[in-house]
Length: 451
Image 1 (cartoon, helix red, strand yellow):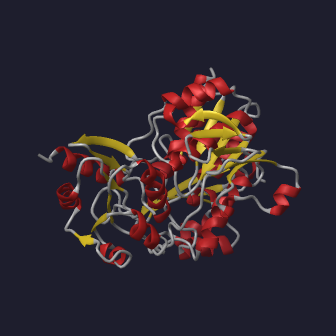
Image 2 (cartoon, helix red, strand yellow):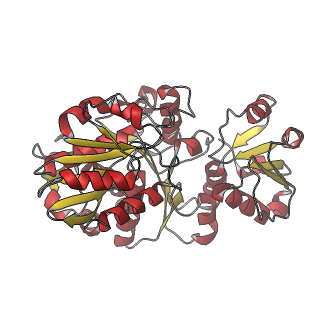
Image 3 (cartoon, one colour):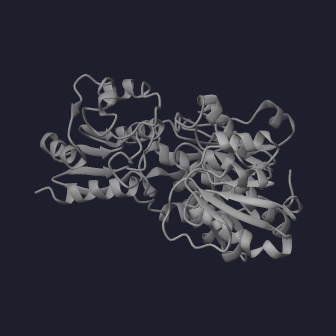
């Protein structure tokens, strides 16, 4: 592992000037004098209104500037396989991201603070947001950031008085991180995603598994073998807790009828007292509870926070009930695994038909795991967007529509009392929307416009 001293008197180039990249620049500027840093920045985009007190190049990456640098701080949106960056790495330059920078300073400055780290293909934001509520309920000060909300480095400045730091981490952030030492690290699940960025599924999974490196305790999904720590890690004596959709005598689980969360085989919390919908959310709650207990937080505080937590926008959020039909916004489901989780989690709770709206940019993911679920659990499927034709191959009677508002209108025509209409796209939104929030709001607006 590295320490802050590895940065002293170094020439550092920050690559990427989005929210994360700018947070890196600002942080390094604050410590430029004390560490003797030489700083520069660049972005592959031609951006407007970039005003920084360091050399900045826009457009094609400046290979001469890269060669002058000792350290490249690469934003998560830029692939490490980008030819100019890969060549710099081969030439001996140190590559790191914002989370590695965070870890260097956190390890040195805050030895008595707790750090919770969460990754997974789906459910990350729900789990870290719930953890924030649990920590607050326990009378401690949380600091939440990373891949959600506040950039991790900014937390070191604005939340220095926090007791517990909670990081949501993407695979892109983890692949350039070596020094993270989480008190508890959790992988919720790993399903196909970002195959336009990784060579294959194993490459993607390996990036996620880096979260366990140097962790003191691990929480993982017993039902997803890809989340399990390596045998070597288990042999090393690391503490491991499991959660599951089954009732387990050891660890977290669910009763056979899914009516309650269990801990060590005993009922812990009835599902009827929880505002979140679906089996997948019951598992998210287990993961958060397991991490909280690992910090010594009392069961009473965990239960109080869980029963009050209403979830996050665009994540299996019931937005309306019109004429007895539930309209559910799961726009955050940007990959296959998220849509499978939503359908499997909600189907047992729906009395009538399940009508699914899906489509967008599949990011070259393998869509075939959706076939059985579409055929057996979805009564009507309306598809729109860039990869609608690929999705249509998975269900013979699926219908193609021009856009999301049209899908809502067509769903309303076939929906009856007791049915549910679920927006869970299984795809990214950028082919037609600014982001998943924009897509979710379009769904909400379209539902509200129904007569």
